[in-house]
Amino acid sequence: MYKKIVAVLLFFTAAVFSFGSVVEKVRFNEYPPQMVFDLSEDAPAYSTDYDEYNRLLFLDIGNASSKDKSTRNGLPRYVEKVQRVDYGTSSGYFVTLKKNIFHKVSLRKNPNRVVVDFSKNAQNKQYTVVIDPGHGGKDPGAVGINGTKEKDIALAVGKYLRDELKKDFNVVMTRDSDEFITLTNRSKVSNGVGADLFISVHINSAENSKLSGMEIFYFSKKSSPYAERIADFENSVGAKYGEDTNSIVQIMGQIAYNKNQEKSIKLAEGLNKDLSARMRMKNRGIHGANFAVLRGISSPGILIELGFIRNPEDHRKMTNKTNQKIMAQKIAEHVRKYFY
Image 1 (tube, rainbow, N blue to C red):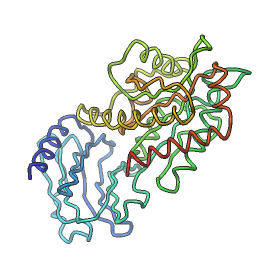
Image 2: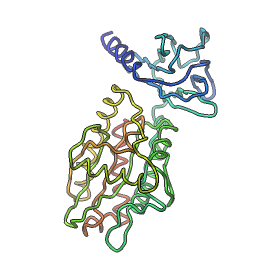
Image 3: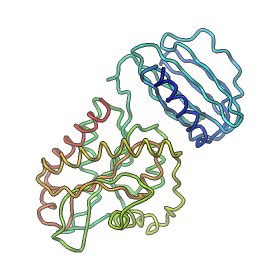
Image 4: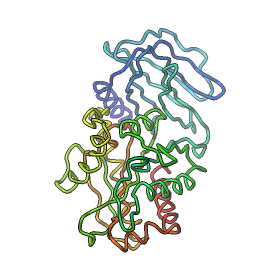
């Protein structure tokens, strides 16, 4: 009971930070098993949380009271109870799931709706992972020894990672070819598919070719001078190609921000330690920084700097296809640990 009370309090607090459009109707689909919240014209940034102990799913949608007044009689086999609470400025839904039912919440468009997908199998691709190979097209990223481009290594590792994860997860690539994608659109891809995790793959660079090793970044509004310099370099890509990265706003409320940061740090710590040891590369630690591409997503996310492209030893390892596959395998291993 205590856990339920805490979870409910957290949800009401989270509601303060959410915004969006009006819920026009709530309906159920039997095939595929779904609960659907049909929305008015504007797409929302909704809040959601789950109390596993009580099997209670919380959703806060809209910036006005719901227009839906249905009692939702005849609940489907996977839902035990649904309750709606109007706060005056938004509507909250409390959905009690039956035992051994898994769920995934995502935003769909054309028409706009929030969809809760249900499954009896936790391994049935319940989660969506977005892989974001950095740079691409007219943006080569960092350039290293013999003209090696960051965009090519990032894409190669990203594809190997996709192949490692696609049997267990819904995997979406922000790019799967040599094309230019703005930082804004990378975030939009992730949010559009309702990603549960966002992984951006990059290669580091420095004037000093002796600098080596890998490091992982997570989104933080505060950062060290070093992390800020790295973020400034990556964010400058936007200005270089006509994008104002300052327009990429943090769409998470404070509670979601804290929770996503905690989850991102947990993944980053274990992964960087294990990956650097496996590749026999220096572990440069994990850092919080205000990366525009991480600022714009609504899920936990990390940005991996696999090594320094101008360091001869790092360059040799990162351009080797066998090593690229090993890197992808190790990242995939930690993604599975993260979810399961």
